[in-house]
Image (tube, rainbow, N blue to C red):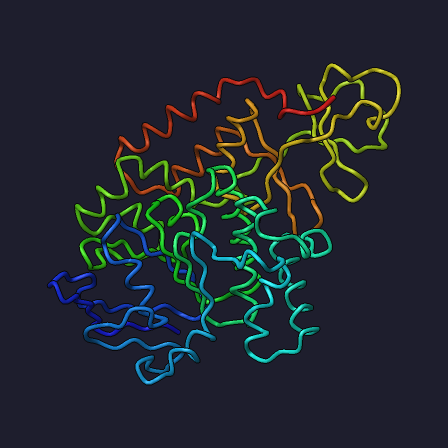
Length: 390
């Protein structure tokens, strides 16, 4: 979908921003360009939509040499999301989102319908947010509108320049999660610029690690973390790459333990056989948990069950599991299948998380030791369940 062939960008003062760059991004692939400031990653991205012209070499988008394509026509086929968002302050959220369809001659009613559909897709109810103005939105909400606007004309290519860099870490992580869900649905070809290695690892199907205008390594996240191609990449990734590996290692069904299970409408058993049991509804969906202290009392399981306030879907990263356990001071985390309306699959414990990490990691002993020390800090927590509300 996007192909660079020996592309160089040299400025009149002699500065070489990009030097003999050749790589290819497949259709539907999300590639993160990561590196320090001034390494050439944003220049690379801006050459794709001809905001910057290369000094030499050729760039192809969907098989066409962009040098032979009208820049305006080219940009209408490429979505563009930047850190500052760039929403029109005098237009409503719905009007901002419908900007590109209207420029393309789409009727106003059809453009607004498309905008409403996309706002819903990025998690903003158009009936609530559609008539608001940008100043009435939070930073995270403005970024969502920016993504919706970039997708409004259904472009095959999406360029994203540090889109989540201006929001706080909690909002940033939430936006990353939402964008991954969105990308799973729309499958755009994405170039995503970031200076944050953790963000690059979390989002990218492949990562291009930049250094001084060149790509030092272009590979899958696990390969970059497990086998840095050069000393520069190893230094940029950092000594804790074993822990970063948690971000790209998903929870799999084989990682889960099967705890005691009871159902909502069951009579309360005299003995749970454990200090706790998971509570399911009649369709095997996760409801909550129950403590062994409740065993033998009158009533049904429903009368004594506590709602589960923390769980993860299968496929979530081990980092998310690790973080959730630490946040809730919990000895286990329930895992569900979101595609089957919350069907319970099992629980992930620190011991199982540790095993999954050791299977996936290909790093030196120090990396493993760091992970083990961190995991041991929660392994001693009694498995009394996650934080819940009475």
